[in-house]
Image (cartoon, rainbow, N blue to C red; front, side, top):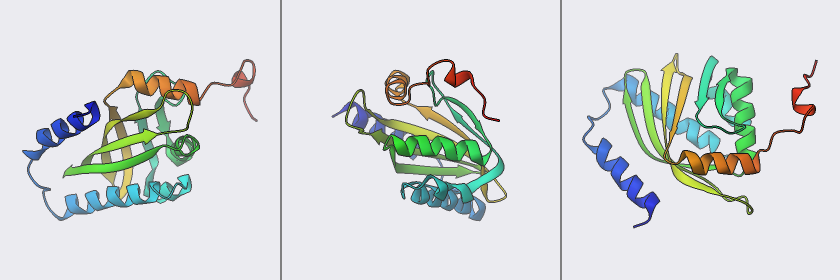
Length: 167
């Protein structure tokens, strides 16, 4: 069994004991996230914009150029634009909801053809507010693989260009 398959099996076993969704609101929240993933799968970063609350915060862990908090729809869509440039894909595996939270487990991967690639399991914890994603926290299985991939495929601009501010 591959490492990824082993992680997926362990993740699914860990959550299989969780109770089913709590009711209609949880079902709507899960459907919102499923619809978000369908929009993401189109490859058009703008397709995710309708799912984002005006004050959204999307947290990306790591020590790489795309890491950190993305605040507001413009920053989140710009992040997804970067992922699209890197041919990043996501395949949802599992959803669970409780109250205003939805947690998913998905496989995320990219094969851009050169340098280190990425293929691992992620969990996202979404907070839903007024039918929109208000907060997303990303958790991943291999921070080192993630950092290596993003540093290789998303280098910083050279100085002084990266210090210049557009006005």
